[in-house]
Amino acid sequence: MTTVATSTVVRRRARAPRYRRDWSRYLLVAVVVILVLIPFAWMVSIAFTPADRAFGSVALVPDNPTLENFRSAINDVGLVRALGNSLLVALAAVVVNCAVAPLAGYAFARLPFPGSRLVFLMIIATTAIPVSVTLIPLFLMTKSFPLAGGNDLFGHGGNGLLDTLPAVTIPHLVGAMNVFLSRQYFLGMPSELAEAARVDGAGELRIFTRVHLPLARPLIAIVAIFSFTGTWDDFLWPLVTTTSSKNYTVQLALVQFNSTGNIRYGALMAGAILITLPVVLVFLANQRSFISGLAEGGSKG
Image (cartoon, rainbow, N blue to C red; front, side, top):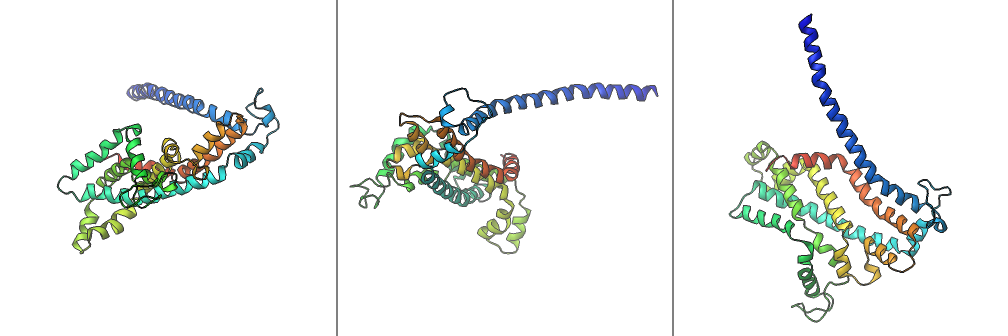
């Protein structure tokens, strides 16, 4: 009895530090969540506060909430057209990335060729290049795009793709990080199913589409989320390539509304909420696949 009681006390004492560590982690997470949510809560509060009270003392819960600021954001900011432009650009980036990145990742993971490792490392190295370094070369390439915007076959005589939605879209069509995640994901897949398919006479494309791709739904979710958010949040490249309001994305539309001199914070916050919702919805729709895909994709090197 004495031995059993002693071992029980020892186990309880051993559990106590672990519980304290767990509670300290939960407390840290709670503090971070609160710090992140406070600015968002104030943004929501200002968005529902009447415009004539925006410069006064704003309560976290408005006394007389109104949708006036949302109507102003839609009508005055031109947010409907900008949302359409951003959705078009982001969806195009998602479709192309979800088609190209898994193919490239599968090739690097399962179909090595001479120099494939060097090519892969060069692709990954591009993620270390700042956007500001590639801005001017990309701009010149866009301006010199052949047979577009008045250009001849050699890219002279016009403006190419400048001030068009394709100019905003093209740099986002393939992402180096998506290729990296795809390669890591396919490296973590068992090769027995592919070997069995080869024995049955299946080619590599059939193996990819019928064996590996159905198991890669978490990977597709990751690529889709990264492509959508990266394209949706981009501000600098659309600012450089677009000049007319009909081609503005949501980021440019809000900035132009903010630069009119008469800043209406309620409408500005309402617009910020509206352009945040698509990103939140995309993430929530793919949350489970996103988390499992990150865990599986990062498990192999």
